[in-house]
Amino acid sequence: MTQDLRSPSFFQTLVGIGVLVLALGLAGGAVNIPSAAGYAGVGPNFLPWLVSVALLLCGAFMVYEARSGGFRHMEEATGSDQPYWPGFVWMSAGLLANAALITTLGFVLSCTLTFVLAARGLRNAQGQSDRSLKPWLTDSVTGLLIATPVYWMFTQFLAINLPGLTQSGWL
Image (cartoon, rainbow, N blue to C red):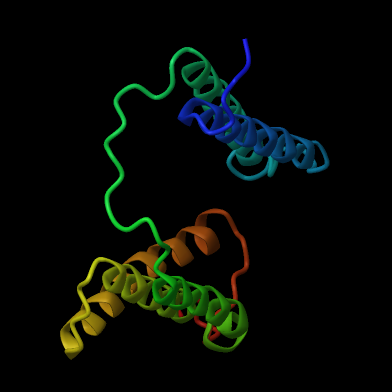
């Protein structure tokens, strides 16, 4: 039986295989990380192994679902058939700004900026191009509320040094 290369289940199978390849790549990288137990009793390779096993299970399930009839209860796609390039530019600018400014502004502020720019791109893609100050402020506060605990968790619990704006470790 030949598979139609344009059928949804063919592309769904490819996505599942891609997740399996990603899981194997992550597991291959985890092999090279030392396994000596740290402060919490687990080594630095614990999280990569955990994520690779989870991805392996998800990828295998995705391939199984795709090969046994496809994803059965998917909602119909909404939106335009054409990509929304201005939104892509906003999101790309956010990622590039983060990469360029993380050592200058610190983790928290650069991630907040990334969130603000990505949210702007997504809002514009949905036709919500409000030009007032309110969405910018809301996104800035939301970005800070997300980035600050992430920074604190990484630096305090995982002892991973992230770039900060000050020596205090909070910005």
